[in-house]
Image 1 (cartoon, one colour):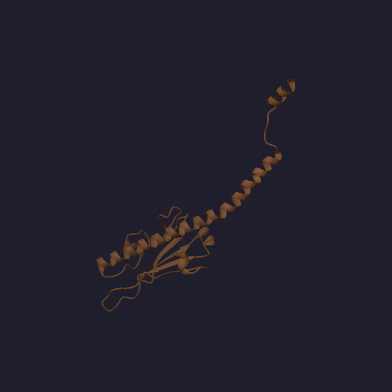
Image 2 (cartoon, helix red, strand yellow):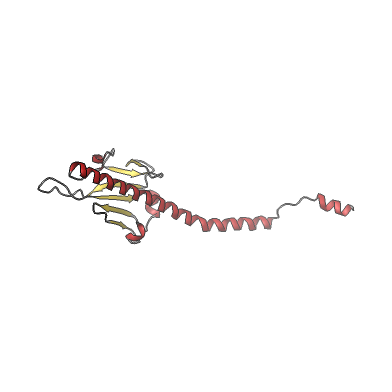
Length: 161
């Protein structure tokens, strides 16, 4: 009976080997999950930039409907500056912001025609900081007045849009 009492009162814990196996499993799972998570973050920031490009395109079309010409810069569309940026949350911020992921510019406003109207434009989003180093597949993205979109990176445009 005394032998049974001693075994019941003995406290059990983890051995060093069990602890090392658990740490190894957690490390393996983390090393598999982190690259997927990082890629997800890159794609989410890219999608935020694309949404803003489409929003500016919509604003350009409204501007054209009201003025019979496209805006020559982002200030004509109501933005604070001709150069803007996107932050970590996908919000439009001043270009000088330290947390910018993409810079935005309205370029190629076209040459005025004989009637004085400008009929072409393109919107350009170019990655900055960590987004620049991580998003080598798509890189910068363009969208023009005809809805044509393209990107400059190692992947084709179809994979990026």
